[in-house]
Image 1 (cartoon, one colour):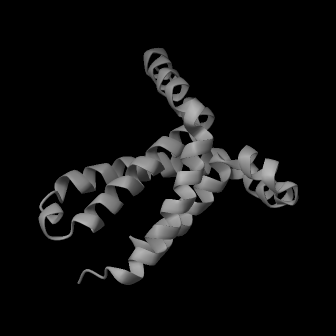
Image 2 (cartoon, one colour; image 1 turned 90 degrees about the vertical axis):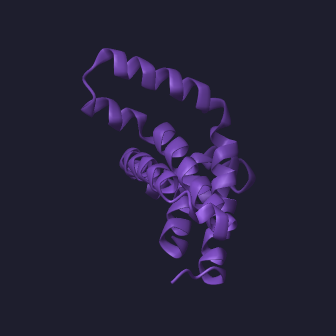
Length: 141
């Protein structure tokens, strides 16, 4: 879980909160601009990775009794990956989904999440940093 997921979540958060970050630090525009062309694919991978994470958390529900912080961290990671991944990768996802009803459902979900994109991005950055730190603190053998 730790380092790779944490760093991926930070990158996803930077893309999600790009407008808020650029408003405070205009010199960050160039760095974020280098990631922007890959935003759709990063979003698609994150959305699928998030769905897989939620499934894994449900399947490892017994871990909640012995390692509750680890389980909640895993679930939070998965939910943030899915939400931001869907927001950032909706355009790319639509190229693969041909069913009009599924596209409409995806548009409804994105419309509900869109007002929170900046907040989700900032939370994702903080949560990603927590995951890197917790990866060193909670080593499960």
